[in-house]
Image (tube, rainbow, N blue to C red; front, side, top):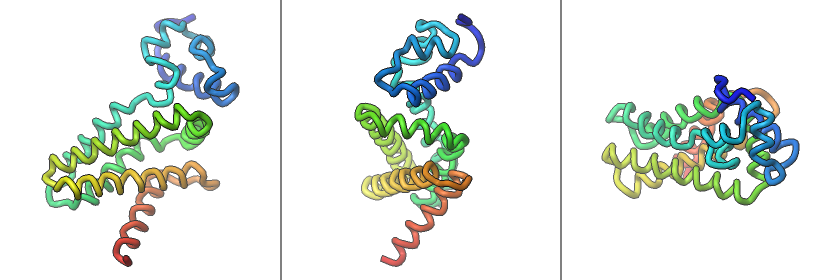
Length: 188
């Protein structure tokens, strides 16, 4: 087995998702993932703490990206404009492979522990956005409302994107969903 071959992390991610889809999450063992990826189980643990983390790889990077993007938006931008910029950046990171996203969501939906882990990840991203908005001088209540709203927009848009039969860019779906929210707020 090629322990030090380049691309091991990505091969492990792909092998895990394939096996989760074929066998189910609970029935797939780390050794199975490593074997399919052509590495050892020890190599698997160099990249991931456990098999759940294969599905949530990059969460810390995503939270950092949220803060970084929020810092680059002009100081005159509204809280919702900051949220829109963050959503756009997140879509660029996670929206490049709808088939993979669809498979990942299928695996997560079939397992209670994974759904809980997904909610924890989403809460951490919402907290990171709330903190980034506060750092920009947005009040506590407004920062929380804007971040929670952004999280809801993302969940709705992501679900639409994953379930769509036609090819659409996640960024476009997010922008349309945020526009619908703005129209809803203006009408109410």
